[in-house]
Structure formats: structure tokens, C-alpha cells
Length: 379
Image 1: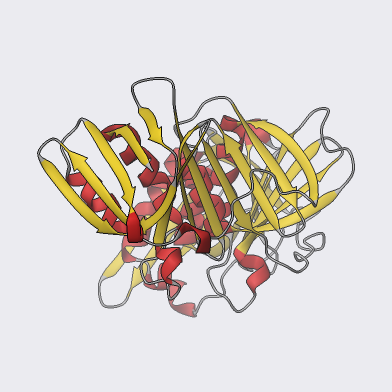
Image 2 (image 1 turned 180 degrees about the vertical axis):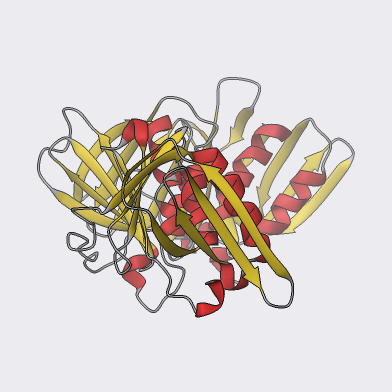
């Protein structure tokens, strides 16, 4: 293999695929990046047991040229650090006998030990022979959906199924949902003309976040393909495959309150800033919200440090005043991902979850957070 590639193009490709390279992978070949060529360009691939990423540097312009086809696997992080420290300009990569890669740039020449690419896991562009469905979404809608749901997934492996985000396709809609048992986030996206029959998959939340980060600068349509054991995402020069989580996502029909005692509408940013300040002195992140006809009073305290009192004006209150204690950090996570100016908070009793909805988008988004029982020190 003998190729010439622009420094910036190679660095960008490595920045993407390195997200699938584990720092201390016990399988040596999975600590590497596979470089190979085909008629479309220079292809970089990295893989672990859960996530596989492939990035194509296209031919036909000054970014890349192939003088001799071939393939090699090189240590991913060492290769990245070498490329990152080279001067901007064309880089010559040549794979030689015994799997050595020669890297030439300006007056620099590096000889890097590589590995046989035959041992590297295969990366198929399609999830065939068992694809379940394909669909396309506007990338902006996809990024919003990930931002507003994946944060709520559990980080504990005690229940693996809730470390993922549930994706349910059906009736021309895509439903996303995540929960950690204390909070829940759900979002619905229209996919007109696609996915009329119902199916569902669970993707690891961390993988979905990585996918969103990699596509964050892209514009256009993202293609999603689901299989029996994997889900694939593709857009422009980037393609990603993620393993799926086996099992059934918990039903939430009986968790979502159907009726409420009280409902308040208020400015989201004012509440968020007040919660951020209250959390500074909140023992165990617990803050108390006392709702009156005019405002919400936020209280937090730590015996050794002091206490905080905040007041946020309401836009409207329907129903009775109420008092509830919540985990302030989890509440902040919810408020930060809502991109609307006003929110509606519904209270259904001391033992029921608090429901938070964006006022301008109540049919598409839903957030729940479970109240916390507190000691009498708040009173």
C-alpha cells in the first residue's frame, strides 16, 4: 500500500475512528486502526466489542491519492499522536513487508510497527443478511432526540437494559425513551412515509451519544439501518455500527401520571439558573420547591456550610400550591436539554413523579423525575 493524504483529512478521520479504540484493550488487534484502500478512497476503521466506526477519505481531489492498493492495521493512539504532531502538508503512508508502516512528511520519517489486517473484524456497509428496516432522518432532528433522551439512561450495569435508549419504530413515528429508574425522558419524531409496522431496539446510551458527537457538524439526512443484533448510522463519509442490548425495555404506561393536582407554567431559564445556584449548598443534591400562587421558592442546605433560598416567578398556576423535594442535579439535566422558553410542571401527589413538558412542544417531549423523601430539617 502506498498513499498520499492531506494532514487535515487524515487527522479528521482518526479523530472519528479513535472513539472506538479502547485504551487498554486485551485484544491487540482492537487497539489498532485498519487502513485500506478501494475505488472510493482511503478507508479508516476502528472497532471494539460494542462500536465500530469507518471513515472514508475520498479520492478525486487534493485530499488523497492511491499509488498502490493495500491494507494494514496500526496502533491507533500512537498513529494519531504521530499524525497530530506532524506539520500541515501532504503525508506519505507506505505499508512494507512484515507489516511496517512508513510515515513521511516534510523531513520527518517514522517507521511504525503494524499488524496483519486479516485478523481485524470485518465491517460490512449493510447489516445484511438480516436487516430489519432502513429510514432517513434530518440530522438536526436526530441530534435533538439524542440530546433530550440519552442523558436519562442508567450508568449502572445492575440492569443492563436501562443503560440503553429504546427506539420504537411504527405508525410513521420514531419514539425514543431512556430511564434510570429515577427520571425518564421520552421524545417522538415523525418519520412520514416510513416504518409503518412496529419494531423496537435498545442501543447503549453511551454509543448513541458518541454517534451524535460524530455527526454534530454534519448537515443533511442521516440513514439509520436496524438489524437483529446491530444498528447502523451513515452520513457523508462516516459510517457507524453499534451493538444492541438484548432484553425488553420496561413498560412505563403505569408510571406516567394521567391526572394532576397542580400545574405551573414558568420560564425555563429562570428556573434553571435558580436550581444551579441552589445546588451549590444542596446536601446530597436535594432541593425543595415550594409552589405558591405567585412563585416557586427553592431551598437547599448543608449543615456544615449554610443554606440557599431562591424565588422564581410563575407565569400561571392551576390547582393547589404544593411542596416537593427533588434531586437538583437530575432536575438540571432535564432543564438543560429542553430548548423551549417555557415549561409546564405537573404535580400529581407526593408519591407520583413530577412531569415536565416544554409548553410549545407538549406532544413530542416528556420528562419525569421522582420526588425525594426528606428529613424534617427542611421544615
